[in-house]
Image: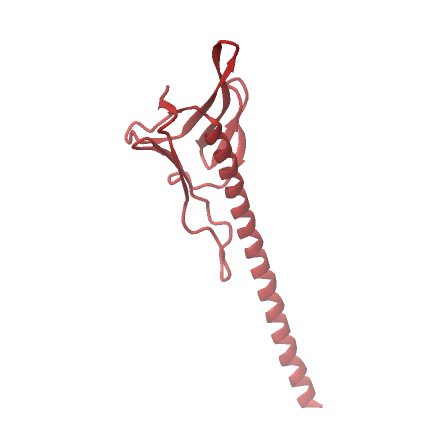
Length: 167
């Protein structure tokens, strides 16, 4: 009888530990999946807009490094009749820990991605190449933590686009 109680006690401890591990690892994997999805969604939007644009303007640099910027404005050429016009595709802005987007100058910015690392996320322009760096904050900590460890980087050629710094 005593041996049966000891076996039941040991089995219950093992089962409890397994269930606790599964709950923690499931939560960590869920946070990791959400982190990946939001960054991937932001890059999907950026890809679509940057490839559709014919003009890219960048502004709001820190004044120290003239290759890093906080805002990009994207425009596409439209020809109606004989006069070409510029259509604003949108403006992306890194502010605080968020990547923000708006379609026109009068509108308010709407968040695309939250929980970015403020010092590491940036738009860089060097040698006719726009580099977008998005570094996500750690979403899970502890024994079973899963996070995007490295910043996600994408490069876009500006060779066939009109581009320049703007105030």
